[in-house]
Every structure is written in C-alpha cells, then in structure tokens.
Image 1 (cartoon, rainbow, N blue to C red):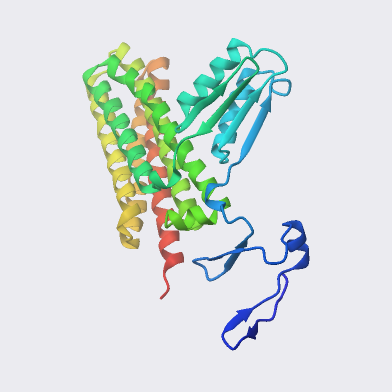
Image 2: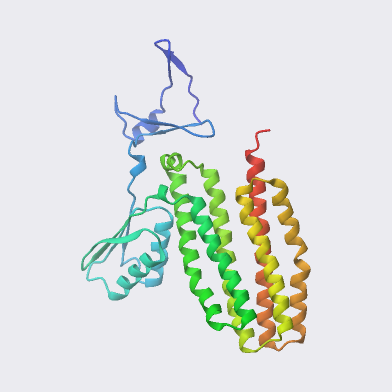
Length: 336
C-alpha cells in the first residue's frame, strides 16, 4: 500500500497525488476526468472509466481451440457466469450443426443470453438482461419456491404412487440451475463493477452471502431430484404404506427446517437462526430410523431408502448451513 499525505489547497479543497505507475498504466493525461466512488466500508475507489456502468466485456471462442462440443458448452457457461456481455463463437470454416445446437442449448440454459448475429463462420451472443432489474432477493425467493414445491411433490408422489409427478420433479431442476447461474453472474458483476453495486444498493459482502445461499438452495434442489428418483423405485416395488408414512413424516420435518432457514434470511434474528441449527440436529434420529428400515428390505428397495434418508439428512444440514451464514452475517454487521 502506498501512503499519500492529504494537502489543502484554496483553503477548502483536499488533494492527494496519484501513484505515477497507476496513472501511466491507465494512460491518464493532464485534465482527464477520474471517477471517485465512496465505498460503504469507508474506502474510496478511483476509476478512469466514467462509463463503468456500461462496460462491455467480450469473450471469443475459436472452434479450433474447442473441438469438443461439451467443452464448448461448459466454457460458454463459464463466460456467462463470470460476466461477459458479448460472446463470440468463431470458426475458420462453416460452423458445424452440432456447435449451433450447443449455442442454442446454452441460450436455453441461461437467462438473458440471445443470438444477436449469426453467419456461416460466426455466432455473436449478447446479454440483454439489466442486472439491476433482477435483485438477489427476488431470485433467491424464486429458487426457494421451486425447490420447496419439488420436495413437496416428491413426497406426495411417493405417498400417492404417482410416477408422473415424481418424474416432473427432475424436469424442474434445470429452472433452479438457471436461477443459480444468474445469481453467480450477478455476484461476479458486482465484485468487478462497483458502480453496479451502488446502483443495486448491495455491498459485495452481501452479494457473496446471497451467492452462498443460492448455491445451497441449488444443492437442496438436487436432493429433491434424488428423492423423486428413489421414490420411483419404491412406487414400482409397492413398498409397504407404513414405510411410506415414515418417509413422509421425516421429509415433512426436513422441509419445515428448510422453510425456517429461508425465512431466517430476512428475519435478522440470531436466536431464531440458532434454534434452526438445534432443530436440524434433533432430526438426526429420524434419518437413522429410516436407514434401519433398510435391513429388512430387498437390495433395490434398501438402496432407494438409503438415498432418501441421506438426501433428507443433507437437506437439514444445508438448512443449518444457511442459519450459520446468517449468524455470521448478523454478527459481522453488528456495530454494538
């Protein structure tokens, strides 16, 4: 860190000199304007880019470097998450149909990505989403609503023997992934764009909290899928209704803890967050009971039951993780 002394000029203006190395690196000349942004933590941010709000970041993928379509798809997702606003896919010759299919799949898997230009040897994607129009709170709530319904439907499908409902749970997981990637992208943008942070009225630290919670909810959604797939096995094998009742009871208890953990995000109550952690610990015997049932089952049934018990256990642990995140945040922001 370089130290600069504050000087007073004209009796009212406070002045500091800028590091020469930084000035040369940014190619700043005499009388050039420089943006000064006051941060929430009391620091100042200097930027030579007065259009920082509308920074265009371009990423290009040449097919000679990405011959595998799956590698290209993963790289496109990576470019999206890290905040590139324009993505180019180029080829020395005609772009193969498989690559065009990958690009279309990518636009369907993400939010705000559209094909702006297309030719025989290039595809240009543009981000049409205004980040400030998608607050973190709204996206987190939407993820929660979807995941909550997935768990409820997985349990109801098992209870009522409805295969089509269990299969539909898996189909909804892609919606959760899309929203999680959006949160990840927004977080990346805020970390690199202080102007966006100010416009959205959220600090990078708070954005990081939302990203952590989003990741947890996405994983809870994965466990809803695991439960629904295991439920299909138990439905086909016509497992005893008393076993189903025990599974449903444990599942509803896990879901209730999850519901409380999401409410804790907005409650700002350390006692409630602490109570959620304790409640999650108290559910452990329920999962052990489910696991014990497998000893009297056929192998296929036992595997499905173990999957359900483990997923419910992980769900309550993830709920506990959310509560811990909120405790850490509340303690960190407590100025008393």
